[in-house]
Length: 596
Ligand code: GLU
Image (cartoon, rainbow, N blue to C red):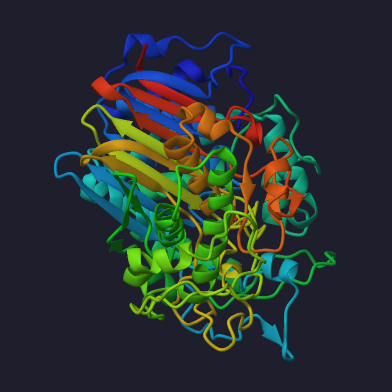
């Protein structure tokens, strides 16, 4: 989300990346963009590989890696590391995420679960004091909400398994951006401003983000030398240096004793993180979720994310819905209803599979989808919230929907999508949870810690069977939904989005727009969004056409902006269509290796 203005270091940066990668400098990339020239385009078509992120620098660094012979995994890690510099409030090594990878050589889809874990001393009542949940805002800005970061381990695992670069090479471009700086844009200023009060409470955060007592100016160059040095530590000593040793001790100390200024009025609770929690962290490979939808195979992220199961269940419900073909109103009615039903089941059944028996196979079964689909009345919207179904393998005729309870959560995060000339594809969503994470920069290290543990439910929400209460070593349920769609075993689409639990509906709506409403991918991404997460009202962007749906009983409230997707479509003949947002979050940046 940087300004499109050129910074003087760009040529040097390109050369440095190339030298670092030992790949030689391609003459074309040695031409810096003209001052004032916009590098940030939301749609690019061409060949040889593609990168699409929310940020021009991240996309450029990822593309440089592809141009120099790196693969989609290398490019994804390089771009993600750059987002840690230029999008520090959405993602970084202090957080976690989910990495979905299509391997062209085998035709397999793999996923890495890089979700944060709770400390081993965290109990189910960790966010309760005197019998009542602590205020959410106090939990956000705390040591208590810090989970063991999964992002460094995710990068190392992805590169070890499928990359062609090592971590040192993959981090080089991002390190240069951190060291030499990037040009601040309005979104960066807005996001700093939104966090200014709590950043001011922590000297380490204020020193980095409020250097002259205020957010940086639009057009100024922002450098993060501490982060460059931290990336150097990872580059030269490996991720063990993050999970053990001095850096690990500093992370633990920051979480246990947040460096809050004595003058701050904020109540900042200490955390439970121990060195042993970091040392034992793993980012396991998990089998992806898979559903078939209108002849496509849709792969997603399994629990502890609810992304794959909820997108998948909703697609199954849409496919099982009797009647059709549906016009645009009925298609969107189905989208809203299927989403509400799938969210009811997500809230009731999905949590960390190491702690909760998630009935994933049944949630994604055609029988369960048919039972849920028959609740959808084409003439009138269901009363929300709807109750969860029973994914027990015993599916009956339709029964009227019953009313459940509402559950909600927050916003931030980033998603990137990459593809290479060999046909490998990555969809990767990463986060530090809230915009600005827990607000606390590890002193001298240049990155914010996550507040991911606020993704747990603080108290029971499901009448005694809540799958998402805190627990020792447990991963909070996520909504991140990096998704890869295959047609006849070959990539057709890859996509994802930030946006808390609206991630699920954003991915679902783009799929419905593309596969059911016949929009092309740029239109499917740009189209106004609505999100129904089993709440009384549908949240919708101002441009979303509500009239016909209101006539069916849907109730709307406004949400100015939902999600910030990136996606790649694989066109016939090997062409790639890379797409980012044209406007949301200041617009994203899509690029291909060979345009045209
Ligand atoms: N922590 C959220 C999740 O994993 C993502 C952060 C957000 O976008 O709000 O679902």
